[in-house]
Figure 1 (cartoon, helix red, strand yellow):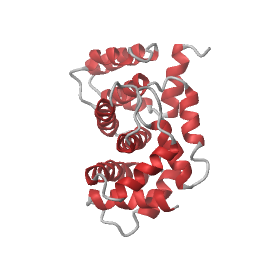
Figure 2 (cartoon, helix red, strand yellow; figure 1 turned 30 degrees about the horizontal axis):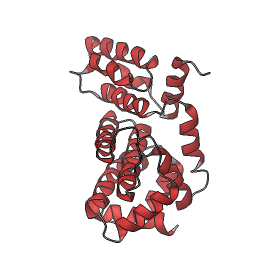
Figure 3 (spheres, helix red, strand yellow; figure 1 turned 90 degrees about the vertical axis):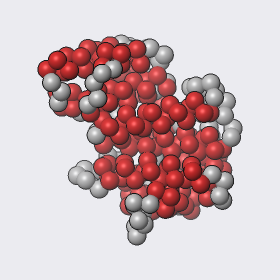
Figure 4 (cartoon, one colour; figure 1 turned 30 degrees about the vertical axis):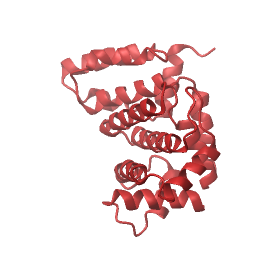
Length: 237
């Protein structure tokens, strides 16, 4: 059995946690962030977010990085195998593998699809504010995956959608089933694409290559256009 510390260490490794982020606060805030990190190292699903009470008044990249991580732990990403199965699905650059990746990332731990969407939205916000490329990319993909899972309409608490569910949701979204969902996905991709793919080292080559291809010639200030372009890429490749 993997110990609690090693579970969290594996999680942070999978998310490419940069320890340098944790020393960017004032000394007093850094102490609180450090305490929250130690608490998170021992946390389990259902307890991770209690560790964030220690940094409730701190709104820095380091604090938001921990909140992003805590939400993923609370969602059930405590076993390295879940991340491994997600990223294994990206072993080749194809839409079917991306849809399998998204089926693993979709949030499903809450009691309703609406609650899962809200939690994914919050998690993406924390990940984005962390300014960490790996977290931002993972948060945006979880946001997109959960949005599609909700659109698929096959929600069962605690059960991940299938890649077929994700495929059907993409088709529904592109068929005009939910323009707001397309725009929400586009908004998440836009922010992440700029930070995680266009500046410095790419957070994930496969996903960034997909975004580079899908968004060639697309006005990235138009969230709806970005959402349609990315979803069409995943549908057709």
